[in-house]
Image (cartoon, rainbow, N blue to C red; front, side, top):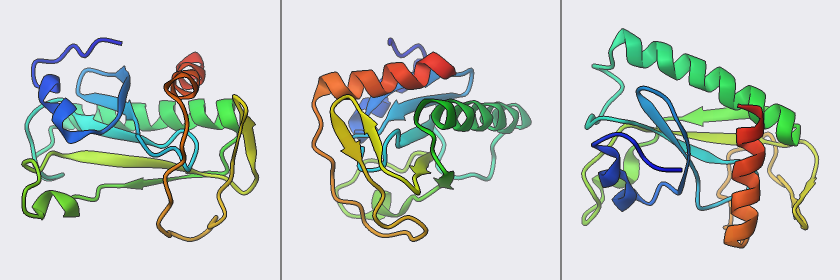
Amino acid sequence: MSIECPYCEKLVDYNFGDPLVETDHWIVFLAPNQSNLATCVVALKRDHKTLTGLSKEEWDDFILLLESMERAVKTAFDATLFNWGCLMNTFYLEGKPEPHLHWHFIPRYRHPVNFAGHTFEDPHFGYMRPRPPKNISPDVRDKIADKIREFI
């Protein structure tokens, strides 16, 4: 997938993950840590730091994207529920890039999911606990992305 917005090249520096899909105002990345299968980062396609100041069009576009992502991941992997978080803390640590508005999309699973030769489990279902990285190959990451795109 190619990134189409002029600002999006800068997003590569943030290590949000692999580009998955984009809308007029947002770009979705498959997050580097897939310990919760289909975890993504959804970033605004313009330079902005906070939720305040988003236009009506950006909010409307976000709602459509939220519905599309949840429907696709529910269909693809039978996710039980979805956590959305706008967590900006690490941007304010020394040596980090400038803050950029983004959301964390974290599917949660009451059950294990077998996909592409891996078992994805959510041992802390119902709780927010740190998730250790899930070591998967670029090929498996591509398969996850393709499966999500299949239902968007």
